[in-house]
Image (cartoon, rainbow, N blue to C red; front, top):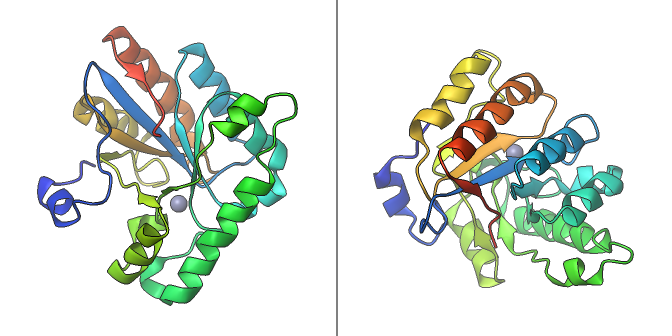
Amino acid sequence: MKTPKLVKQLFPRRLWDGPAEGKRLYLTFDDGPIPEVTPWVLEELKRYDAKATFFCIGDNIAKHPEVYQKVISDGHSVGNHTFNHLNGWKTPVQEYFQNTEKCRKVMEQHSIVTGKPSEEKALKYNLFRPPYGRIKSRQARALEKLGYKIVMWDIISMDYDSIISAENCYRKVADNAKSGSIIVFHDSLKAEKNLRYALPKILKHFSREGYSFNKLK
Ligand SMILES: [Zn+2]
């Protein structure tokens, strides 16, 4: 599903697309890190020398710090997706803010990669993606004030939707992505079936077309 231009224009401070010079795509993976899916994603990305951005749930980082550290040591970006995957529309501003900060703290706490200080230094913790894409203006303002960059997307694969076929999930991305597109996938159990089908095909298709896969900074 492609985000309509009008929606992007309504919220111009949020990031909807990455830099588009050359042929560049920005894959993002939400809701991990988990041992069942994330390491597989990392292996697929490696095969194509692709870099991506992982919007992590803090609670998953706390449970699987070794998977989180693998994401970092493989050279990808990590972003904040709140500690408990909160729905902004249903959460008071203060609670939303605190839960996001809780996630940032666990990101910092677990980001030390032994023997690779340079990668650790290069990390940024200001990328934030609201779960479900749902965030109130007051929440967004509170986070932006603190230096967070709110990252939305150009294309969402709907990989988590069990009604959508794996081929359809692939086509949604393949038919709509253009240079600069930020694309959403999920390294989650819910999305696993569609993801395992669509991701390798996306990597293969766009690599053949001369695209590179980049992380957000
Ligand atoms: Zn999510």
